Amino acid sequence: MTADDQSRLDRRLLMLPATPRDGTTARDVLWRAGIETELCDSVRVMASEMQRGAAAVMLPEESIGLASQLLTLVIAQQAPWSDLPVLVLTRQGADSADASLAVSALGNVTLLERPVRVATLVSTVRTALRARERQYQIRRHLAELRQADQRKDEFLATLGHELRNPLSPLLTSLELLRPAAATEPVVARVIAVMQRQANHLVRLVDDLLEVSRITRGLIEVQREPVEVAEILAAAVETSRPVIEASAHRLTVDVPDERLTVLGDSVRLTQVFANLLNNAAKYTDPGGSIALTLRRARDTVFISVRDSGIGIDRENLASVFDMFTQVSRSDRRTQGGLGIGLTLVRSLVALHGGSVTASSEGPGRGSTFEVRLPLVAVETASPPAKDRRHGFEGWRVLVVDDNQDATETLQTLLETLGASVAAAGNGREALEEFERFEPDAVLLDIGMPGMDGYEVARRIRALPKGGTTPLIALTGWGQQDDIRRCFEAGFDHHLVKPLDVDRLLEIVVSAGPTMH
Ligand code: ADP
Image 1 (cartoon, rainbow, N blue to C red):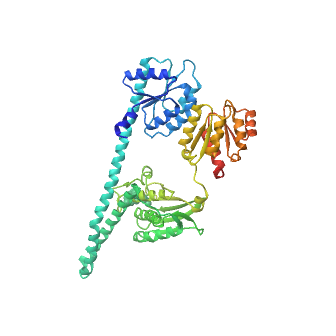
Image 2: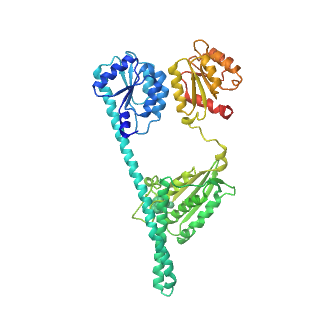
Image 3: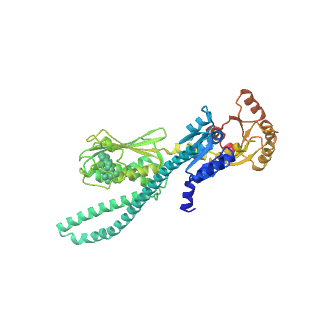
């Protein structure tokens, strides 16, 4: 689709009219005012058109009961910049339940009482369109920001590569000069200085490249079971020269228990070496650094505490941001780019963990604590069900004689990942059951001809119908109706309008045995 096509879709008013005549009248009136209206003949059409793009939607309050769930779902899935205006044409007089449902469920709602004067209709729609136009502006700004951010990341990557190229011949040349300079103490000292500084440059450039790889999602962590104590030992080894150079006292407190996490040992070592280096760097010589490991239930906590310069409250939250350095005037000898902690946070996050900083204040030391999930628990607990994909892989048969109700429900379940077949009466339901072989059936009770009870009994009598979960979806919630449902062979009884979360609970609790 071209940008022009999309912008046309984004500018339309979608209308679900109470009657076809209402629709054409409103469309003509709005057309004369220069507003393009697209009529939708069902809630389902409206919902799918909304996903393609719309400036505002208009519907009569009579449709709300049926539409609210589907529309709420579509509206809930809007991008953060989007707050789609919803215009509801209400009946005259007292406040209705449908109108208040719309106001509470659909967000940015304007109520218009019928009959609506032409001028009122036009000006209300215009206001909605203008509000939407401002949202589109925000969308454009966000896209520009994203682009700028992307360009910055690409620039960092190029910069890193380009800086690295001249560094390696420099280092090699210094290496070659070394023997020749051995007899000249001054030259030897100068070469040693150059070598140290060049090595420092290499580290900075490596950090820069690393962080640009992370922000562009190019870093891979190879996750396998690794023992945390071993990682910490390797990190201490890496940081020992820096710690010893400042004559800090390091204490390591690690329990005997073997604690295993799923991780990339090189990356995790890098995390703790960075934290130890910082502790050494931001502590005056002769300070103390404590590295501790402990476990609480399914999480390991690793903390690096120092007796150093500390961090004041307002900077605590931002130390992990890229290029953040708390105080540029008070730079320690081994300055960095303000990337180390960004790397730490990203790498920890790639391992499913988190990191926090705390400090009692300037001069009172800092503590960095990393949390990582323990491996045994991670494999034992199934991932939490995401509502949006709760029905992924499910085949659901929906039976209702009200076509709008089946269509709405069908779209709702499809949006949640199910494949759905629909039937409008008992006979069709039985045919579809045999053809489609659903994992679950949502069945209306009050249908002309064969009612839901009868359909349930017949499904239960079919060879494949013995165990398929049957869920009654009815307007009736009396004790007696519920009893009749269970007698007819239903497993569950839900009252209309459908509570999607309740349905998901049923599906989840039925679990894999239903597949
Ligand atoms: P860099 O050390 O290269 O400046 P980092 O991302 O590692 O970058 O750290 C960001 C900033 O956080 C540092 O510049 C410093 O101001 C502060 N910081 C980090 N670790 C400590 C610490 N242990 N004690 C006090 N300040 C710290």
